[in-house]
Image (cartoon, rainbow, N blue to C red; front, side, top):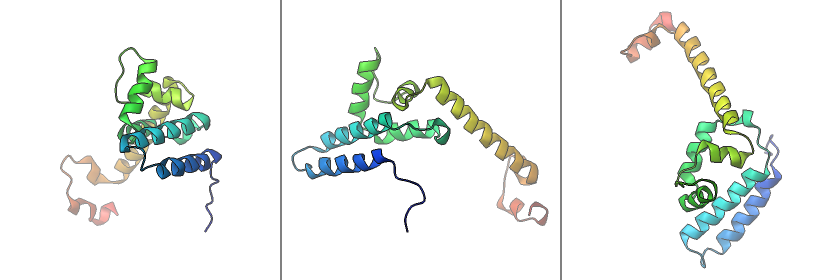
Length: 145
C-alpha cells in the first residue's frame, strides 16, 4: 500500500548516501560510519525546510543527543561555542533547523500548554485523577465511565 504522505526528496538522497557509506563498512570503523551518517543526517535537516509547528522540540533534542555521534556534535559545538560539549543545545538545534531558539522555546511552550489543557479536561471528567493515591479500582467504578 503506497504511503499517503509524500517522501521528501532529501530523504531519498540521504538513503542513497547511507547505502554508499554502509557499503564501505569494511574499510571504515564503526565510529567513522556513525560520524558520516550523522553528518549526512544533519545536512538533510539543514537543507530541508522543516515546519516548526510539526515538531516537538524537546523530544527532537533528546533524540539527537541520544542517537547522533557525540564526536560530530562536539566538533559542531567547537565551531560555534567557546566551551564545547558533547550534547546538543537548543541553540544549536535551532541553528540546524534554520530558526531561532526563541521560536523553538515558544513551540515547546505551545506543546506544554496543549498537554496541560488535555490533562485538565481529563481531570475534570475523572474524579480518580484528583486523588494523590490512585488505585486501579477507582477507574472501574460506574460513575467514572
